[in-house]
Image 1 (cartoon, rainbow, N blue to C red):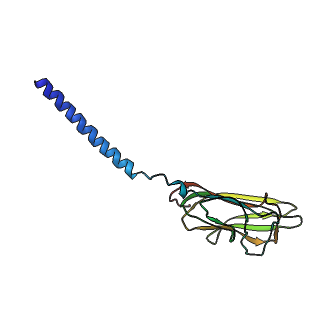
Image 2 (image 1 turned 180 degrees about the vertical axis):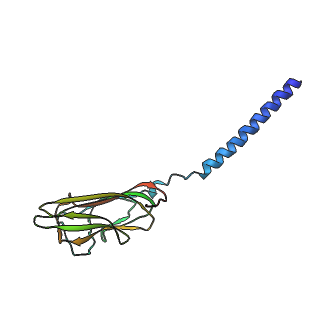
Length: 172
């Protein structure tokens, strides 16, 4: 009878240990950041129309041919992408100017320059891609600094952004 009691006591201790371990693991699991819902993901790509764009200094480039707008955060009427989900984004812009024209464009975040794009020769092209931490409500756009025209073909001038990783991050 003593052997049965010892075995019962050992099993009771093991069950108690496993119960405490399970509780601890459940606590860790509940503190993990959950994967955001699919609706939180955003990405867009927009290009110019076949007519290109005539630009004025300081004007925002309005990419009217929208190839994709997941999350509906890019507004082709204004040329502005408004961040819905905080996180790290990959953002790109490219440009091509017609012969005998040069242009400077700026990729802007909330009125601050992220990067410059410059073209200077016939059918010259430029592109920039940045990975940047953005917060909900941040606004991105491409703005003209100098020059007057972008080449009239929808395949060369684009603006695109995609959420890489949701969350709160700091830019260094």
